[in-house]
Amino acid sequence: DIVLTQSPGTLSLSPGDRATLSCRASQSVRSGYLAWYQHKVGQAPRLLMYDTSTRATGIPDRFSGSGSGTEFTLTISRLEPEDFAVYSCQQYGSSPFTFGGGTKVEIK
Amino acid sequence: QLQLQESGPGLVKPSETLSLTCTVSGASISGSGYYWDWIRQPPGKGLEWIGGIFYRGSTDYNPSLKSRVTISVDTARNQFSLRLTSVTATDTAVYYCARRNAWLAKYWFDPWGQGALVPVSS
Image (cartoon, rainbow over all chains, first blue to last red; front, side, top):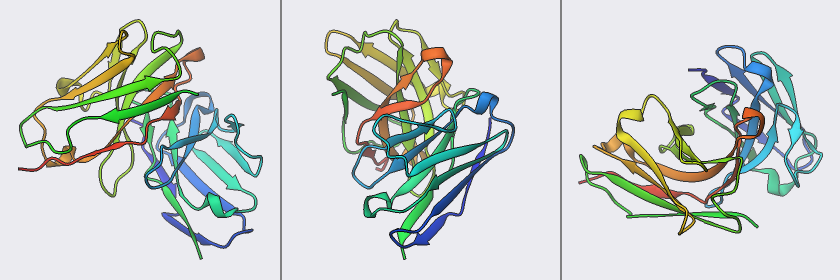
């Protein structure tokens, strides 16, 4: 199984700041088949990004994804109040599909 | 707008069977090109893919759970279900249902249900 390790575990930032979230894979993720999700308590997780860098429908362009191989990054260029949440990465390059442990972006 | 909603008992006893149903609204579960999946998140841990069922009825499961999991579909009710046998406290989790894209074998999950917390306790 591909193990995804996300860092940092918690990111304390202020609205307007830039957030950089890392997702590292234990082996290369085939074809960059990596997605990012946003979770908020009591809400359904939301797909943000797929194929490493393609934004899902309705996702604002302050969210961007990059990377390849074993190193992937989700960047939020300027944090809005609604962006404070937990973010998880998921690889679908090989089965079983696996998720990272999540990064919590909290208000500083 | 496609929506998914989990339902099931709020508590399961150790060694018993956990059963959950996901009701799909806003689209037919028989629509082509999608799997219908279950994913869980134990308290304080990351998400774990459990498995899914293709609209034509074939299934695929996480090998770590395969011996205890059955996913089925009821197209008449536009629902799909999860059965997890012989549960223990480690099966305590928030269980999510989600639609899995199958286009070009790119398996991301969208949308998701809100999740159902299922404690396993005597």
